[in-house]
Length: 456
Ligand SMILES: Cc1cc2nc3c(=O)[nH]c(=O)nc-3n(C[C@H](O)[C@H](O)[C@H](O)COP(=O)(O)OP(=O)(O)OC[C@H]3O[C@@H](n4cnc5c(N)ncnc54)[C@H](O)[C@@H]3O)c2cc1C
Image (cartoon, rainbow, N blue to C red):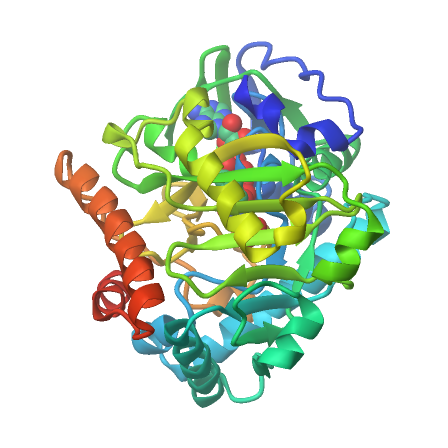
């Protein structure tokens, strides 16, 4: 399975032998489908709030098989949509509340993993987003001004000069950057597997190699039997379309990654990233990278095609064109990398709702709960989702249960072929916008219009 190609898989140093599948029909209080961060954090906090609750988690492959075991490891405060989108839809106070909750989630991931003895290579160095042409520099200024106007000093997003930016990451063509202290790097698979082990040790039943075929009130139906439970939680994110009745809920977008071999200190003296800051530039087609604990660069980007009918398949994790492009972009950013081997290439699916707003919710009457649609920003957000779901399911109320994503429902995606045309059209538009900006130095109006259209 393509999961095996990821860097994380080779460096996690943990046992990936599948746990036994569901043995037949069972009963639980809460049944969760999907053992990624969303499902596992939900189980973790449910148990913390009420150790007596019987929890069963059902996973089609193994815990961490999905995006949670393959991602870029940015445990960031990014939340879809950004503050401007939240402020427009839910008001300024809501935007500030989301910022604070996301900052807290980054700290919480570090705190819990330390307390639980899960070594995830956590380092909180913040994020630098480089401006490498004039249009990106204009965007950097606008982003900083907008965040200050909307959320005041809360975010702490700073504009860096060329010299200051190069002091953090010595990339080529840098004109300036934004910097936020609110991001940590993690080893994503160590986090997923560590969480799975800890919840299991507390008595949560975790069944792997068990595919759910449908969820309905009181029942999680799988190929090996049914889990009868008062509450059923959907935590399948980028794979949700494969569940009966959920085909148009989230579009699975593929994000692809590469990783280099470990590089010597002479290379790192040139590149920087001394505090393991996560890095990107301000192009529209998102790229992201981290310096790993063993001194590699793990680097990814969007831009792989969307597949008709929201299909997800292991061979979609590899795309020669996109993987080569990632290598070129990385060498263009940091020429010192060029002589070093790319040892790993992989990818995975993330979930995008029609209005690009993540959501978490619990329909008490039907006993159905869900979280997801993090649009590629799910590492810290899934922790917030897990804490929130645990409170909603156990009937508690707090600041978390009043955040604007609670109970939010996006409309469904269009049927095919409109969906295919729209998603792939948007992808091409952003690629052309980046090229036009690099050429002209002027922000592309088409990209702004697109951002407004999808609510960013
Ligand atoms: C390449 C890549 C890079 C990314 N980088 C970042 C990043 O740096 N920072 C960030 O914040 N976010 C990032 N993301 C997004 C982030 O990883 C996800 O948003 C997050 O992991 C979602 O967690 P989840 O538990 O909701 O879903 P997943 O981790 O995808 O888990 C869902 C699970 O459900 C299981 N499943 C699906 N269908 C069924 C079924 N029918 N029956 C049983 N089980 C089923 C799957 O096997 C899977 O294990 C990235 C995503 C990708 C793909």
